[in-house]
Image 1 (cartoon, rainbow, N blue to C red):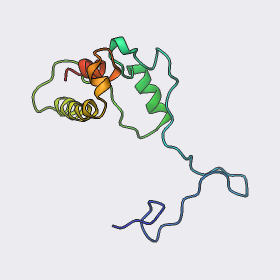
Image 2: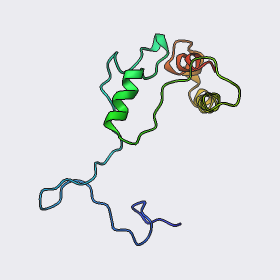
Image 3: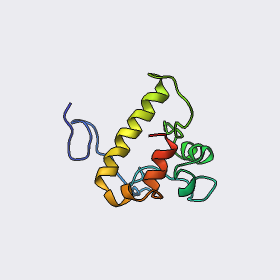
Image 4: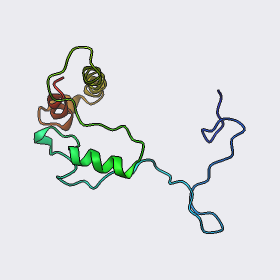
Length: 120
């Protein structure tokens, strides 16, 4: 189905951002709400550079309907959902290694630490 300039299917009403003249607020522009960047929500680079379980919970509270999950770090059965998530992450992050060769060379970069945590 084709879409117009606003990303809507043809025939759908236009979505408005900001405030309506009668004082109601419309949709937020800019996407999802992220939790505060603190050690409760985000893991330091040395420990794998991802979101903690508490951080993912905070994100999901702030963004209802989100399917965000924590890293797959344990042993998984081949072909399981977790194994497929790991394989997908490793493939995506391998592309980041190509895109950012400086980070790929540095063993302490967030990219390399995250890949190590995911066991890529």
